Every structure is written in structure tokens, then in C-alpha cells.
Length: 293
Image (cartoon, rainbow, N blue to C red; front, side, top):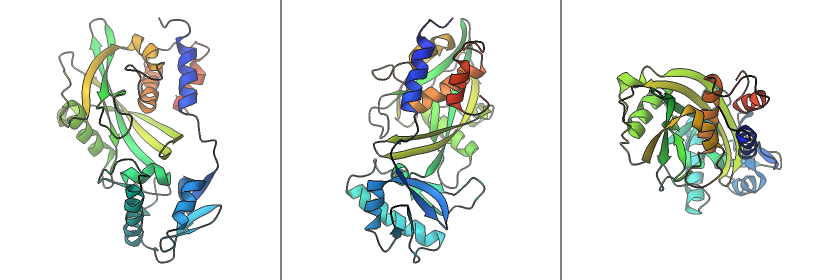
């Protein structure tokens, strides 16, 4: 039973932290197709790289000298390194994201992960709900991010979650992140069940977060004990599903989940029936998770 007031507070928090942008944005295009969105100040900064970009008040696109995949990738990498030296990006990752106009389109170029939000490109990530059929009822493993993480340091998170790098499939990214973050081997992660996608589009201090999250559910043995391998997770806790709505309400402090993880967890709670389908807020909460939830 979810205590009175929890669901309204949860809806209020997620509606606020996941609200779409309200500031004007400038189109970032490649071959005439939208591949990103920039704040006006960032678009003006890019206009100064005249050998790479052509820019006006409505859009930023590549200069004619950058007409191919390789030329764009090389040129925008130089720009990203300059921006990083200026302190305009999050910490450099040495990891590239493919940039496409749509899922079925070929990649227009690749871009350093640290610059993804600056250019407002759509990124892809994989998240896993680590579930356990415990003696006292179903529960979910929640992880705490390292205080040295570049994004959302020290906050609570899903058991597994990470970006999908260039040249990597969803399944490959899932297996990689599951081992690094929770010590899960390939045989175990192969039983993770796809549970759809969730979309995030919101402004952050480092630019536009525009991300598609591939959600999976993974039921784990009761005896499983998460073991982080890469130092990016510093704590794991097993939380009964019925207690998660109250946890998702926290905006800050030691019990606050990231906005992304909160949305992924909420989606699971709706699918698994923890939130009563007859509750008046159910359709509003489902709308936060996207169409069909």
C-alpha cells in the first residue's frame, strides 16, 4: 500500500525535473536533417568556427568543406577539444556516440560523449532493473554512483545503466555495463527481458539531454550480491518494490535517484502493478514514461 501523498509528490517531482526545454533552441543539421539542438549562446559560439560550421539565428550546419562522415567527425572533434579546453563540456570520456537523423538513417558523424549535450544530439542508453523475488516480496537492486562520476555524482541509480557507444549494439552495451557495474556475467545478462524504450528531453547545465533509454528487466537469484568492477558504483541496496515510490520522491540528499533512473523505476512499478491501475494518478504517471505505458 502506497502512503497517501506519495504519488502526487512523485508526479510533481518528475514533471519538474523531466520538463521539456522552455528556452529557444537552434537546429543543428547535417545534410539538411535535424541531428541536434543548441542553445542560442552555444550556437553563437559555434559560428566562430567558420571553417567547420555555417550558422544563423535558425540553424547551425556543416560548412561545405565538411561534406563527408570522416571530414565531419574530424572537424567536430577539433571543435569539441577546443570547447573542452574552455571548460564548456563535461569531463572528457574518450568515447564516441554515433549521430543520426533517425534510427534508420546512416550515421552522419561521431562525437565525443562529453560534447553530446552541448550539441544536443540524441543519445542512446541501456538501463536494467535488477529484480529479486525475495521472501518478503519482490524487490529491486539500487546502486549508488561514485562521488567522482562526471554526471550525477553520488546519486542513486539503476543496478545497470550506461550509454551505447559508436559501433556497439544494445545487447553488447548491456553485457559490458552489467559486468562493469554489477559483476553480472554474460550467461546471466542474456536472460534480461527488453521492456521498451523511454525518452528524455530536458535542459541541463551542460546542454540538452536528448536520450532514448532501452529498458530491461532482469530477475536475479536471491543469493546474488552485486559486485562493482570499475569503481563507478560505491553501494548497492535491495529495496522492496512497495518502498520505491517513497524513495523516488527525494529531490536531493543521500536517497535521491537520478532523473533517468527514477523514470526507469517508475516504468517498472507501473508495469509490475505496484501502482494501482485504478489510482487517479496512474494515467498521469504513465504519460511521464511515454506512449503505451
